Image (cartoon, rainbow, N blue to C red; front, side):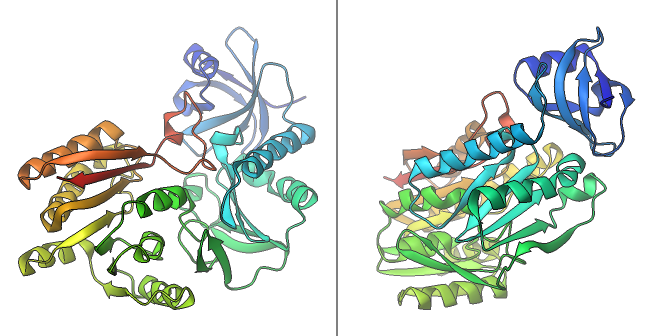
Length: 386
């Protein structure tokens, strides 16, 4: 008999509206163990679907299928094939991109990124961790990669009671490899780099920003120089700022690899740098603000909005008339409307008039699932100072 979990009518309605998560507070009865694939039942005994069960997370159930269908190996193969087909159809001008975007591809808690002929996987729940071997086998059959690496070191795994580790699951994975993003090449450390190696969700926002870049460029929170390297060739000079010496060294290596000679790198806290640059009376024609998530929880929202206001205010004071500001937030808890209001308030305090040129989200290999707002997390605004 398949393990079962009975849920409250609230959870049945939530599933009917398309959201795959059922919280622990809506679980009525459990006949399953950690990581089981379970049949989810409503209080009337009617099947809601099949889900991955966690006995630790507040997200107790992650629905894979609804109704009477089974989430078996054939189903898993179909979902992976559909995800791969989507990316092939996008015609992505890069060798690094997201292949499986968890809920966005109806594969909750599974992430697969492609870096050339190497795949990097993350299993972010007890149930997906248990099925990871099957996932790897199917990916090998479909794509025949040179190697598959598990970056199972994300903090969210601790909430599931899972070990945090990095390990090669199949084939060979070099310590570093080089990927191409349009006409820029990057050196990637798949074992220790942020996320699975690079921030792939900003790829097409960098391409968009390059259309407007000019003059003197400042890229704050630069990390591996994603924006700086794409925009520097359109600018007279460029400055990338990051607090990490290791990140700064990567930017310098990547600049040299791409023969970009007008890019300087400065190791500093971006908040401090912006204040000091304002005191020095510096001016820039293009400024990029791509900070890490300031609001990792809803409780941190107030402080986060203050942080976004601070960096945008400082940037606008440094931005020359006719200049371009690219400002981003990857905090799900900060809505697009809130980010727009923060920038508007910063513009008022900076005595600046702004026009909104583009509103953007994550690259299309990170699809947003309608009805699941958690998949719609990245905001990118391109603005012009009048």
